[in-house]
Length: 267
Image (cartoon, rainbow, N blue to C red; front, side):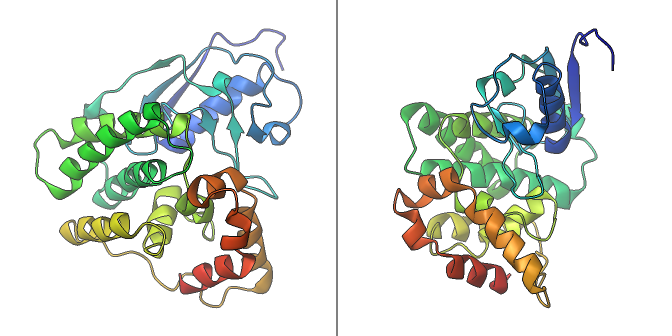
């Protein structure tokens, strides 16, 4: 409500906090509603200065060109070169005290970014280089034992975000809007049912769950009414670039509405 634009916006926290900081910094200089810009390269004016201080590691929000937003009809977000943070402060000591389950679920968001990017049709050498290093670090964190695991996870998150910045995520992220669950948990629930698309990644993911004694929520769609199921299915199928990256240009004939519903029913 002030005629003066703020000097800057700082997002401190997890992926949601950082995405909100990106969205606010963009909307301060672009007219209308955030819903008007859900899509790719629709932003016209640069954002105000915005910085990130992540206190969780895994989402890659600190380095991605997307601010994920959920609207009444789609979960998409603002994808733009103007979305990228101007400055990032990465301090692994800020991860101290994160509950084990949250540490795992958020870290798996990074692991899944890597699997989806490295197995996608949009892959390029820029994305491959960052994705392969991020995946290596994720394996060190979740399959090995290192005293500096938080340092490695924070860098894995950053590299994973860079990997998807100019490639794309895939099937898991398209389907991860599961009954409003938090993003990391939703990704883990979804990924566990995608062994026909990412067989090696899902096997390794299950090894990580076993090592850290993680038990995923089950039967969460049991008794779901028809309207909620249709909404989830529509949200998933609206994410065309994610499906194209995963399955190619003919994805609509592969990932049908019936197949999406069948996957959700299994969850």
